[in-house]
Amino acid sequence: MADIAFHGDPALKGHALAQLRRHIAADTFVYFPAWENGQANVIGAIIEADDTPGYAARLGYPIALAETLPVFVNGFRPRADAAAFAEAWLERTPVGADLTGVVSRLILSLLEQQTLCAVAERHPLLEQSRQAIVALHRRAIDGDEPDRKAWKSARLAAVAATDAIGDDPLGRKAGSAVEAAAWPGTMRTVLRDTLSAVGTLNLYRSLAEIGWTEEEESQVYKIREQAEKDGYKADLDGLARVYAILDADHPALGERFRMRCDRMDKSVATYMATGWKAIEVMEAAPLVVEA
Image 1 (cartoon, rainbow, N blue to C red):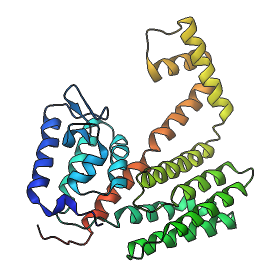
Image 2 (cartoon, one colour; image 1 turned 45 degrees about the vertical axis):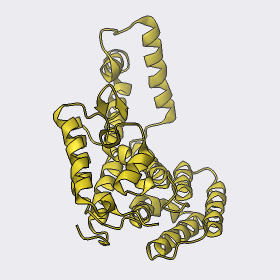
Image 3 (cartoon, rainbow, N blue to C red; image 1 turned 180 degrees about the vertical axis):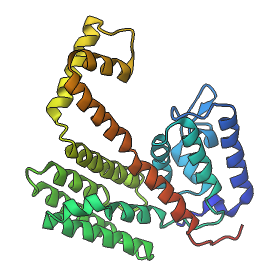
């Protein structure tokens, strides 16, 4: 069954936009929760409930796309940028567009990202699996939806390829991304899970570039935990407190931790870029109902 944007009804799109804009104007648009005390996230603003399937059904979006929408929005900071993206999401989705192939197209864009491809190519079985899953999503886009047996076979092959990688953390994270993508676009969490796995791979690679280690991560955690027990620097909160503690007692680690946090902040680029890509793919979707 096709997913037709706004079920071909311009009034439905206009009503959804008006609801979202009302929350933005009233400063009740939030990242989370979905719907509580008059505040709403990108789903709750339309449905007035924590009901992602209801959002997808009401507006004609594929369930996997609706499931991933809050992940896209949460990548934007400050909140004004998140609101602008949420508004663009509705505004730029064409009324009557056939969105059936959008999820598979987005998964293809993730499976073809440079870091994932480069890591997979170091492991022939994983690269073979990646290419097989790419082929399945391309078939789905062309209207030749693979059956459950084909998807299951691809998943089992991806798991086996990941298990064969051995001691290569980047390789195993690339394997997780390939495994996550081995589901049809109709599966509720396939896009969200694939995006998360690719984002994790990109972050891990980025942290490896600066040599940040798990030992350093653990050291910072223990320092922060001890400071909380001792009430040290209690006049500060959050990262400001951690920075102050490290600057006072562990300046070299503090400098490294700032580099780590900078890489963490930049890691949301994968999520934001995929969000904008989703809008572009929807804009290019064929119209089956003229607005």
